[in-house]
Image (tube, rainbow, N blue to C red; front, top):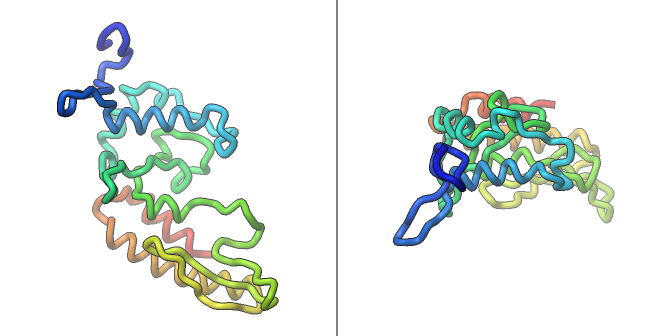
Length: 186
């Protein structure tokens, strides 16, 4: 099992420039396990029995597209349970590795009950449509109805989705691209 204090057979740390540091993949796994412990936004979310075992998880992860891919800032791609799954369980059946710009597309807004990309503009008595693309907030226009504003958002989202699929196509799990395209329909 890897020593008195290490219950996993895979190493969880390494020495870099004479300093012992936690391995990125272990930090990612530990973050996933700890997220579901009593955090408000993770209420009701569980980790599968297989994923509770770091060795099992790591063996699985090494076989997945996107594992150990890095963001430009050096952080690992996120492990996501929402894009393919229903957001209630971290498991081998639904988890995928994705870059932040794709992961952020699937964040749900808890601030209002309007469809994604639609905001009430009280002063103009209209509905505003907007999207975030490549880290920039883009105003798409003002509309008389929620449906109109949302439709414009979905069209622009599909353009963005196709750009992201092209950018990451060979590094993404195929299920991610499918879910991204499906997220653009009403």
